[in-house]
Length: 133
Image (cartoon, rainbow, N blue to C red; front, side, top):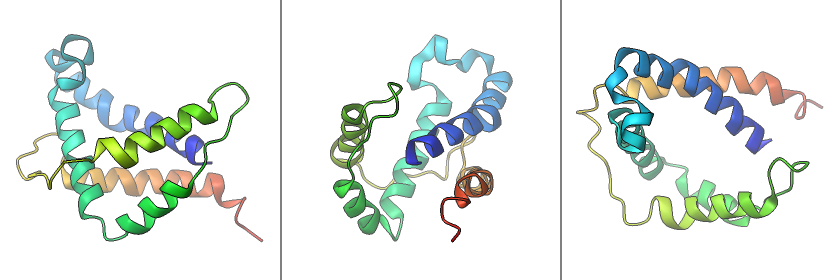
């Protein structure tokens, strides 16, 4: 479910955040500048800031550490999921400090919180059937 949720939110992010940015700023495309363009820089700053400042981070990290990847019918392999988990836990946020996101122009805290709310509103009904008793 976690991987499926990730895919759904990636598609939503592409439609609601990345494509509008790309259309407004055609010179800042991924093809020209890789992940070093302004959109990705600001997105990474927001991601790091939210991860480091979140009150439930320790609970999340503990449960992520205990998780085990699973194979998904030849689409995704447990080894890949475990590798991504380990990158998240031990490399992505390592040696990173709080981010100054006040200067972000395109990927702001408010925009990100709206995206999280919209993504949550989309995803919860899809998976709710698994939790209804």
